[in-house]
Length: 159
Image (tube, rainbow, N blue to C red):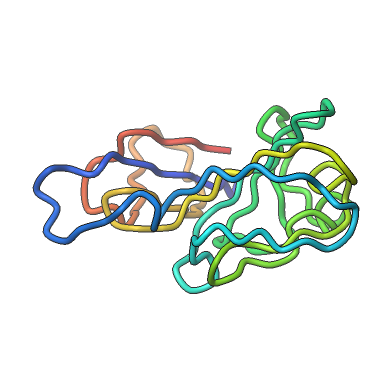
């Protein structure tokens, strides 16, 4: 069984180098245009990796998560129990690329409907802040899953 694990942690005071929140995290509100749209939020997802969480604020679409570990067009619905969607119009028309300064959207209305208010949250992979890893479960409760945080995670989300 394959799972995706999202690992987050708060940076400790002993961190040797500066990491500024605007370099690794962005909340970006935008209005959909019903066509291709590039979201420029300053987060390097193409080079550093990470995750984009998208939620249409006008319509009752489920929040969607896209990450660089599994790649595109793979999306997870945060409010559903189904596996990753890789073939539907939602998967192929929502987030279409991870960029060095944000991400690009397709014309899928759930994330880019014309005139609709949408919220996006981008998390860049960074030590002591955020990581996305995949693993294969072994059926035991003591399985250790490696990550690149460099400390004990403060939050773990498994889907």
